Image (cartoon, helix red, strand yellow):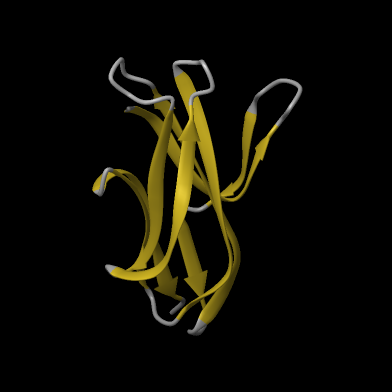
Length: 125
């Protein structure tokens, strides 16, 4: 697989009529007056090109890390469905960040990090 893009936002919408993607409130920085905080929703989209050697379906894993510590882990299925392009959307809801730092979504294929999106979570001063 070859990465086309990865984007993280509060919400990712995929229009079933036009096949267009909309990212609402892209997450590139979060500031809070106190910790811990709860993020109500974090969504991400992974878009890839299929290489000749790629299977029609690739089982990936998405990890959510704060300062390198794994908070969540879940499966992410990439299905090409007869095409050479695919998109996969992941969602995490109501998770707690106990401290400021760097939040990272990492996508793994064959146990190797394939794509990621990171942003800072800071304490308001």
